[in-house]
Image (cartoon, rainbow, N blue to C red; front, side, top):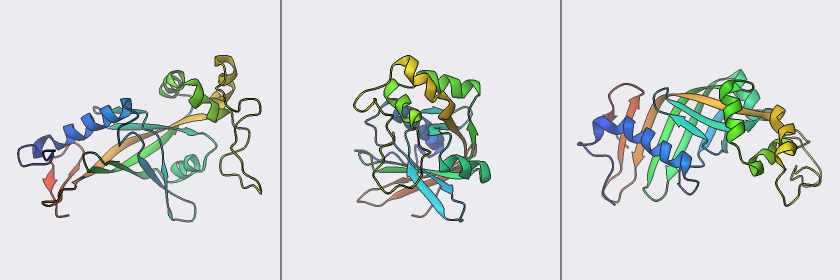
Length: 200
């Protein structure tokens, strides 16, 4: 596969990043469809987890994922909105590290739109009766009783809306790395500013 990061493409690196993320958002088989998001836990340590990329918008530099409104990541972002994203596509061997400012939205038009676009199988997650992260002496799948092996009906799923929220992140800085046997390539930029080469 030809290199993506070259002198000829350097100026268009930010456009390349957003085009790639837009593709990944729509294609669940894309390597960047399930990125890592890193928040800061209450003890000050980084708290990484894998999420599903749900929406991107290049004009506003927005990246969105869904979350249970009761989850630890919600409390972490409300306390410290500085987060990081980590995207990697093993096919192209390209990595994006994105520093961002995040906020939680629950009852906004955007949150409602994302809820309406959610599949019934995804909505089942928000019907969980036990707060995510609750400790237990036994295994907890947190699947509602009677919904094992099936998705809820549309009417059943609406009970989960109260537990649904979205993480809306505004990208600030991007670090792009392309792995290659002939030598890795790295480009960094602040969003809206000219990209530059960086040593790996």
